[in-house]
Length: 202
Length: 318
Ligand code: SF4
Ligand code: SF4
Ligand code: SF4
Image 1 (cartoon, rainbow over the protein chains, first blue to last red):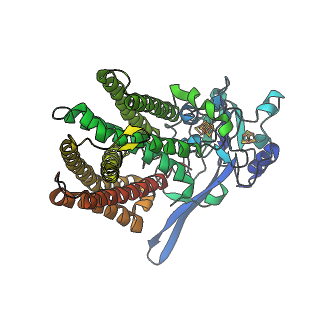
Image 2: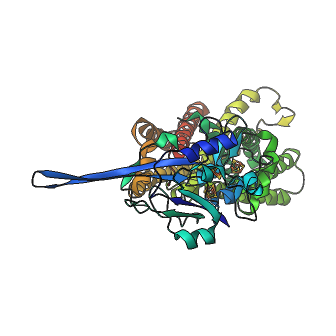
């Protein structure tokens, strides 16, 4: 089972991964297989006349997590959404009818619809690059080395297995093959303590 | 209203109406057979039966517009082992197929009445299955709190009863008007004998009146249930966190008011009609107008409701 690791403690939100993926796969405007989500929130406390702010803002780079429980594959009526032997999930263009059911099911917005072809599209973990022995485009592009990929057991052994941080959904839904090194201000999933500051970019 | 969901609104509402109408006719056939000859029942039930076909076909055509690549459409059966959407399409086809078979048998009076009743029974069961499978598409999505609740199957079932019985009622009054029109002529329509024989004229009218009375009861009961259950559902959504509260937005304001008003008006009209008009010997014209009006009001209300349902799709996560 292949997966991703993301290190939120070093990501500075530069979106190089987003651009590298767009470039590699020639993605049209509006389709972003890898996105960088800004999560922000906070408040202040008063002591006497002094207001002390406690605010947070951090980034999460997210693509498809090639989940262990891929709800997108389960709901697909055509079996176009396919899981490979190595656990990666891709869209078979010869089968997809563009019903967009997978889009409703995935809580990470990984499947994205291309209105021109009438098909769903999504991250395939750069299958061709991997076959050629290269790293996925997004992983190589990150100047902060915040992304890593590989067999999920190895990633978990190396980085730990945490992945329940806002704005990511409760991982029990799809069992994502994703591990996250949290930002120091990371908020636990489900608390809704902040909000996504760049909804148009994801 | 989001026009992108229009195919799904038309498909789900019309398919449910077809199933409901088929079941309503089945109930009328079964209960009616205790008091009337089967030829009498057929005379009022058959025209309604033939009206279901086009309704369903319209719904199925609409559903095709939801597929963005029609060239791959034959693949939609492949996922039946895990996908409720595949199962919906399979059940939709089966219901259409059995319904068509039954309609043809009825038209040409093929087979024994018992055989026809068995085919009708299978069709009705497949229809119930279709409504169930349809609701599971939404109910089984753990990522959409507004859909993954009891309200989805319950509201689909209520739409089925409401619109199905009203559609049958409307078909009844329409054919009555039509028959009166034909009575003075030779009584034939496309070769089929549709005008009542003088002998069972009274029975046909009696059966029609009692059917309409029960249809009114079904509409008032299911419409009333909806008026109680919608607020219950919304209260639950309100308690389901941020996403739940966001999903409630389509259920507020003018659309919500309009929808409740339409259902209440449709059911209310029928209630009045029960007391005023549904006697075997009254002039059918006001009756026809009231039933048709009630049908249109409730149909628009239910389409609005389905539009709200699709708009309440707010996914958890990001
Ligand atoms: S992240 Fe979404 S699209 Fe990717 S495997 Fe998981 S459920 Fe499917
Ligand atoms: S849009 Fe394509 S991949 Fe997604 S569920 Fe429909 S057929 Fe499957
Ligand atoms: S692995 Fe490849 S396809 Fe997936 S997000 Fe990275 S660059 Fe895009």
